[in-house]
Image (tube, rainbow, N blue to C red; front, side, top):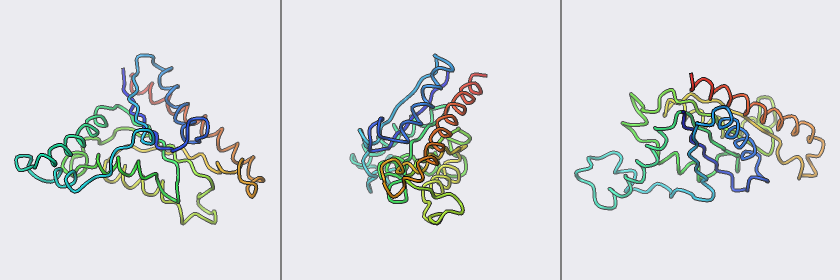
Amino acid sequence: MATLLHIDSSLFPADASASRAVTRVFRETWQQQNPENTVVYRDLSADPVPHITADAHLAGLTDPAGHTPEQASALAARLRMITELETADAVLIGAPMYNYTIPSTLKAWLDHVILPGRTAGGNPSLKGTPVTVVASRGGSYAPGTPKEDFEYVQNYLAAVLTDILALDVDFIVPELTMAPVDPAMTELVPLFEKSREQALQEAATRAGLLAERLAA
């Protein structure tokens, strides 16, 4: 039996969210591959974590013996999120692009789980854990496109998840998701549909392979 930590951050419901549609297929395939597999779910839109405070930040860097009650409480909340992440065998993150970057709710969660001396630093506790990021976006920011230089989702998350947390990261990128609703993008609808189908298939394939690998 393996545990998947599934995190969604889209502010839209499942029937209106490109990232949630893909993470749902991943999760369903994960569970179908092995019914004994479990899922721990966090919806950062419905139940956001608070932005990190000075108490929470300083408590992670100082001796617990000297913590104020506020610092002790803030650190305990961080440690619950960190433990949840550390006990997962695989991680799935829905990360839509909002104003060229990730949702603030996802950034807040990352700020809490990045803890020097535990999840970050010389021997990070999460090293090698597989994480799949569904990085949806309304347009295209692929290499060679006019907005290539405005891609701050994959670039940022690759740096944080790989360089700081030492996770084993894969990206699934459904793009041009605004094409069906923006008249100016009508001619791009076929490319959107192709991207969506590719993302859904990729999610199913990766989830199945990952579940099989972890069961071996």
